[in-house]
Image (cartoon, rainbow, N blue to C red; front, side):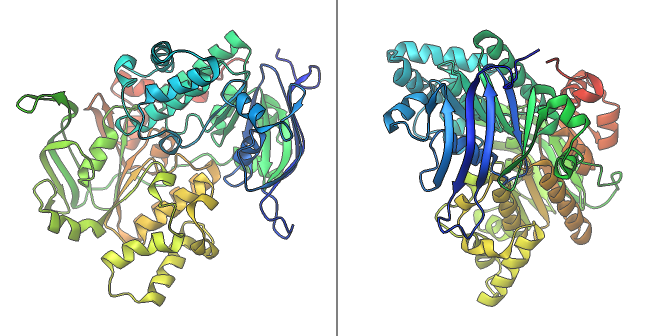
Length: 542
């Protein structure tokens, strides 16, 4: 049995922590009077809906909320982190306490290779020379499951998939073997098999080093398998703390019961025949990877795939990171830098052969929601300006009052208050930003929506609301969705048909209930085993 804070000295002791942005006290605090203790070597999950204060608590511990009024005590091995000199706090960050942030594209420097960024941590905290630090960076990237790490270490963030970028952040956080790892949604961008690999990796490192792990997440199935204790937050307050098994079996608070019951349920019926919206024939996508001007070298990431999607249905595309699913999806809308050969027809239009001017005229009909909502939303524009951009371009006949009304309605449809129009993206949680991104895509009333991991940043209760919203809009307006996701529970809930990709090839394609209940390929079965371990494999042992 692991040690609990009741019978061991706390590694981290948080007492009466309050984080307030409004110094007048008229608005609720982001974190209110929170007290929590972690023992050395413990795995503690901090859960709650978006905006509940989970991430804000972690940032306050590390002194990363400069504009807030923070009171209380945060004792780290006897030192109060709220009162130590800035130089001492800076030394602690990364070496003794490390953090994996939720959004890898904004956490990584786009001007440095990922190897240089990992090496920088080792140079700063361990004083290693660059060559040795780069060698260690490659070892760390290999350890967290990045293929061809010796080559990937020289890649820039934009050259990696979302899952690969998240693994780079994990490697960076683990570089100095910290005593406490704060993991803020560390598996959000990972497919199901890699998620399990990362959890196994964290468990192995914990056994080797005695590292404690504070897991901030909305993924309750993962919490059930990974954490030893669970702390539940609601509206900035800590409302329940218990051993994992006891909390899931006997939750005390009604809010906790709601979180546990918020698993996605099947929201659509079987696939129906209808007119074709998406037709793909022998599509091949490749990227230039070097060579000379006369003899360029290319890497194929989508290998001659063919499929169709009918109007009004949701086509799900699943596969591990690097399988080519995002490249395929973006190529459908000509948003990828990949070189495409073959045929793509959207609502009868030849997309590959379409002239740029004609393509711009069709953009209103084919919209996209990207995986990372923070990098997809301009930090210098208000939400009103972000939503109005599409209307100004595609609906120039609307006056200011009409645009305002459309923006308000779009926000209400995705569960956001109208007051959000005057605020900026940084004022919202990850889940709230994703809802704004969905509103931006829907506001111009498209025919087809490409959804690239649209719910990966959302907690389960909000995820369910967004899925119900998307299905309702689809049924009311006849929308077609191409849904890219590694979350098979989401696919089971909303996809009419599923296309499974591996190494750029389609390995299985059919009606969702057939693919997920009676898969023909061992690879598909392995994805299902990783996605639904409580149904097939049971729980991880404590």
